[in-house]
Length: 516
Image 1 (cartoon, rainbow, N blue to C red):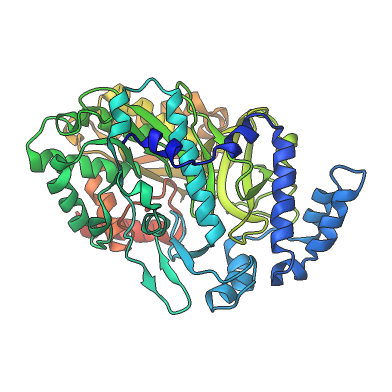
Image 2: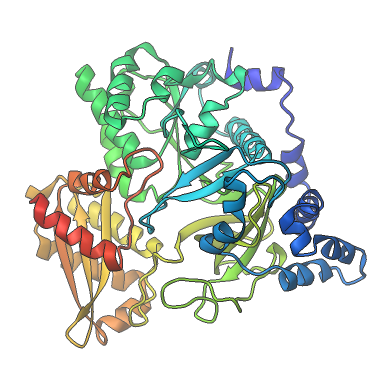
């Protein structure tokens, strides 16, 4: 039975979608915070920070009194503060810490800038919220011009192992593994690669198994991080001796991606496909399902405002962040009705997983205030501004895409470091491509430098001042993946950092020397 028909037949409610469609973003968020505060008011966190007092302020004539008090009573939390002060208690088996009940699951989230894993609580309410938003995204496919056959096919979800580690009072694993292990029974008919393969922890073994089984499946939708999906498709083509992936999956029409910008991978994907497909971006973090692209012909994502999360927006400016990208205790935040279109903000999250005023580390640009539409432009720690060049990951992705088009090569991976150079500064780029016979490092350097000057006026100014040079090393793509493997970061939710700093940079240089 087609998946859309199944969803409707099972009575999956889409009231939340309609509520958001016909409601003011501010009203939705005001009510969502109220629900969160009421539910968590008797937890240890809620009592410590006097949630009852904040809830009382909802009665006041000042319509923003609740938000002023919320900000005044609860400090901003980064991961270390949230974990050490609160989440560790829940991890040790204590109940009613930041959210009612016990936390039975913790998602391991290494991100891209930290050496050690983070433990993000996944409550029952958060699992339900993620499932609801996933359904909303599937239902949004009805807005796309898709052949009817797509809804008859399977959905290949390439994520972490569904075999979770039992730590006594809780289970730990990748968020994708936690969610896949808890799939609703009605969805399991459509889900590939199935429970047996999904449980495998060895990443190479998992990909090889999928490559062998691929001919038995009718896949119409693929979900996963671009780098690993590309590696998987290459394995499928090699194993089955095919020219393109549509020879084995003729109904493949949609690729749902997230975690990193898709732009550097677009050219590589085209070479693996037999025809154009729809690329749909999603914003699913370990902390919650934040936004998704709900309509064609746009890269904007619509924020989910009424499903277990409340957002604060922090202008991504020097008065709110230090030079390392850490948020300052005095940072000014605003609600969704106060944001400005075209401006970049870091996100704070309060959620039904027990995160409160929590800095998730992403930077977004507001595209439409009325529709609550955003694009992700980078991470607070993945901007380079050694001397005022203010270079964002968005700048980097666009420059790499322009470079790849100009040289007619694919560049699926890259990273850049800001380094001392004499008494001033330089950027050191590492470009990952397997088309090395076509290019020279000097040519890449000159073209990349030129494109960044076009894209970023601050960069252009600093290149004639404190940013004295640009260095480029061209490496095989496999070097990037071997480094990740050496760090235990192989798998669907791991991404190579676009900006590499401090000890990671030193580690990376030593690895390259040993790998050559």
